[in-house]
Image 1 (cartoon, helix red, strand yellow):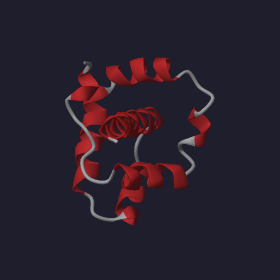
Image 2 (tube, rainbow, N blue to C red):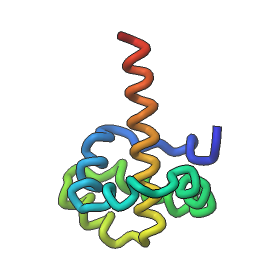
Image 3 (cartoon, rainbow, N blue to C red):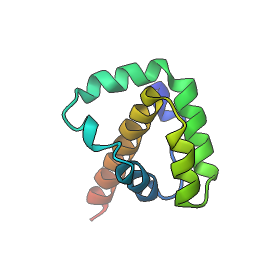
Image 4 (spheres, rainbow, N blue to C red):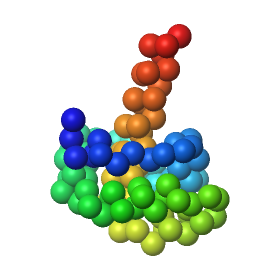
Length: 98
């Protein structure tokens, strides 16, 4: 369990993923080394954690887009990794239940 397990995106992970995807922020990372991105994101975890906490309070997609668009690239990349990680964990649990 790493530092990133402390703060999770609450609510609708699909909504956060949708915003990141619609903004074109997911596809550029698909060909990259996600383990390396994850390791680098941990060094910026306080900033990533702050972004997660802010996103958890936002109720609509335009507000989320505006917030994300102002973040540094490294934090956005970390958010993409975190959303993907949490979605994978969610779907693994869902598969175990069915």
